[in-house]
Length: 267
Ligand code: NAD
Image 1 (cartoon, helix red, strand yellow):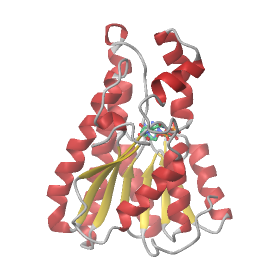
Image 2 (cartoon, protein in one colour):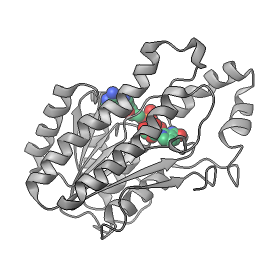
Image 3 (cartoon, rainbow, N blue to C red):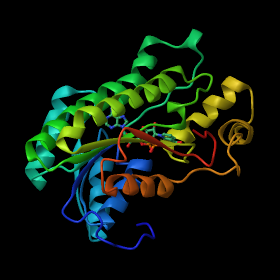
Image 4 (cartoon, rainbow, N blue to C red):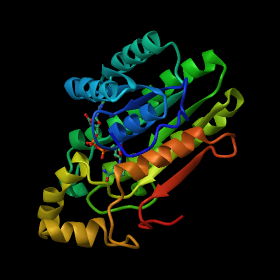
């Protein structure tokens, strides 16, 4: 568990977080549970989702693991139904599940393009629609959060599907801010810099090979080159930002994207 004190800032709220069996999503689930939310850990890795939910339960929180692939329409519908059957409502949905593939465009297969864009864009659409319908029915508003990236604003070579998808999420987020306003539904995007999670650890050897560098050089000359302090962003940094966004008290903060990247990209 993290070092954050319990403050019940999310008491009575139900939050569903996709891709929450690992990395950033998992830390958001931990922090939200510490703040009193009942959390739904939706992930395609069933065992890891169940384990993350059990860990939260052992620490005194309330969590449910639900297995689903966010790119499968029926699995998403079933997962949201299971969550709402269990907890009775839905207040927060975080579209966080993501994938990465590092390769220059001339070598990139259509399958690898789709592997990245399907989970980020199609998956976010399916989860947004399911959450939006439930929040409309409840008539008590709600929060949508998208896990963008500094790559929602900046490009890097060899990451065309990821950069394209992360830019696309800004469009979905902004459209939901406009469609959601009349129902009290806010929509925002978090844009982290590099965070040491399995998604990033996996790409270090790929980047080293494609750029003909050592793995240390990849960290220094690619990942942290443009930060103000050569420092990785942490899962805790991102989870705190998520908590700030979902507890913001008014519609003043909607349709926005917040960079959490040690100054890698400044907007
Ligand atoms: P991670 O690999 O630690 O976790 C991703 C989780 O998503 C895994 O548990 C995986 O099983 C799940 N997942 C993948 N595809 C899925 C699918 N189709 N359906 C359901 N679950 C699926 O990665 P992370 O670094 O925590 O990334 C989380 C999000 O943060 C991603 O959207 C990623 O693009 C974004 N992000 C990460 C970084 C970083 O540096 N780590 C930076 C910016 C943005």
